[in-house]
Length: 226
Image (tube, rainbow, N blue to C red; front, top):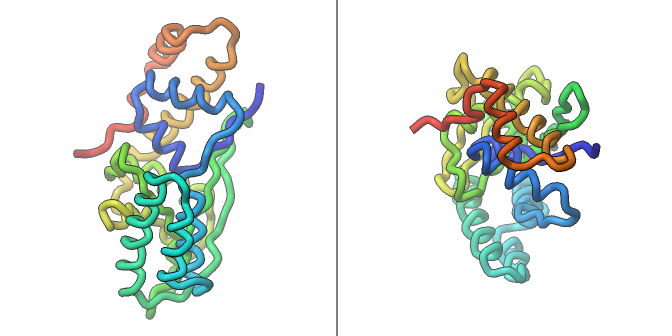
């Protein structure tokens, strides 16, 4: 059986779904191909933050995006980032990167934050992931799962992690993490891995997978706070 390797935002999107939705999304990874909707955005944000390109040059890159929805959403996200970034006094750093791997080796979550910087007068390095999905909404409990995974795997004595919701123009940080966060995260990781195994079990139907998930008696993978 092939292992599953997904980016952190993809994992959170799956974790926020219903069990049936998780099955549907994970089935898409059994087929070759796929398109990284974030690819241009990540490249441009890193370029602006490091001073390689300026906002005007970024807009020219965006104009070359063929797909209209991606072009419009990327422009909106870059404008939100520029609005925030222009007000900051930051020392840019290279973001740390690693991956989470399950004990079985069947699941890997790539941890590749786009930003790392030291605010003026600070000593800690802020390590920031970008979030530009309309659905699911990045509510505190969902952000907390992502932050917990980052904190557990990107080890740095002076790292402070955050997820920058470009749609709401806010950064979710450690304040979202509670005593229940790690348990929710472990449930999400286990559900994704169990569903992935079921998908690769010959003749196992969706209903049988749902029954299997139910038999695990796990709480729902993520219940975003209202």
